[in-house]
Amino acid sequence: MIKAILSRIAQTALVVFLLVTICFFIVHALPGNPFEGEKAVSDVVIQKMEESFGLDKSKPVQLLNYWSNLFLTGDMGMSMNFKGTPVSTILGQSFPISFQLGLVAMIFGCGIGMPLGIIAALYKNKFPDYLAMIVAMAGICLPAFVIGPLLQLFVAKPIPFLNIAGWMQPQDILLPALTLGFGVAAYIARLMRGGMLEVLGQDYIRTARAKGVTTSDIIFKHALRPAISPAITYLGPAFAAVMTGSFIVETIFQIPGMGQHFIDAVIAKDIFLILGLVLFYGILMGLANLAVDILLLFLNPRLRA
Image 1 (spheres, helix red, strand yellow):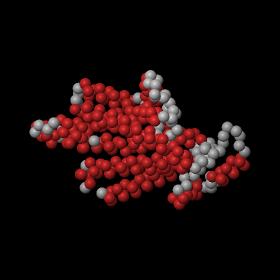
Image 2 (cartoon, helix red, strand yellow):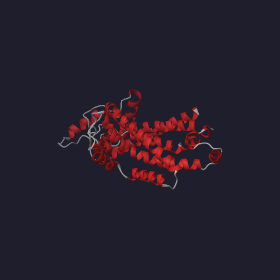
Image 3 (tube, one colour):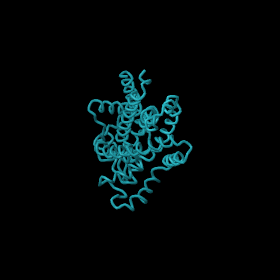
C-alpha cells in the first residue's frame, strides 16, 4: 500500500512538472506583450522591464531559472499585471476564499447527490426515480451562468438576509456554493444510482432480503460501501475544480477568489501568475486524486492486492 502511494506521488510530481513546462511554452507563444498597456510604451522601457523579470534570456534558460527559484527559495515569481506583487501573495489571498466556497459546494453536492442517487435506485423506474434523474439532468445541462442568476432572482431577492452579490457576511457563501454544488450533485446522483443498482442486484443482497434484513440495514451496512466507489472516484477532480473556484460563479456573485485570476492572467499575458496558477491547480488535483485512491483502498480490500 505504501509502495502504491509513493508511486502515485511520483507520478503526480512528473505530471505537474510536464504540465507547467508545456504551459510555459504555450504562454510564451501567446500574442501580445505583458508590458504593453493602454498607453504607448517605448521599446527601451519594454526592454528594461523584460530584463528586470528575466524575460530577455532564452526560453530554456528562463524555464531553468523558474524551476531553480521555485525549488531553492519557493519563489513563484512576480506578477506583471499586479504591479510586481508576488504570485505567492496573490494565491495566498485568494485561495482561502475559494477553499471555503469549494468546501461548502462539495458538502452541498454530496448532501444532495447521494440521497438522490440512493432514492432513485430504490425506486427504479418509478416516480421518485424519474424525478431524481430529472433534477440530475437539469444540474448537468444547466450551466452556472444560468443557475446563478436564477438563484439571485428567485431566492436572494425575496429573502431579506441573503445578498444578491458580495462577500461580506457569512450567509453570502450559500448561493454561490449552491450554484457550484448543483452540478456536482447531479453527477454524484447518477453515479450513486448506477452503483447502487449494480450492488442491489448481487446475490448476497438477495440473500439478505430473504433472511428478512431491513431495507435500511441492507443499504447502510451492505450496499452503500461498494456502491459509493464510482462517486468517490469522481470526487477527486471535482473537489480540485471547485476548490480553485469558478470564474463564472465568482464573477456573478462578485467573489474575490482564485477563479478570476485565471482569465485575467491570460488576457494580460501575466506569465508568472499563469504558471503559478497552473502549478497550484496541478498539485491540488494530484493531492485530491491521491486522497481518493487512498480512500478507495480502505473501502475496497480487493484493491490492496
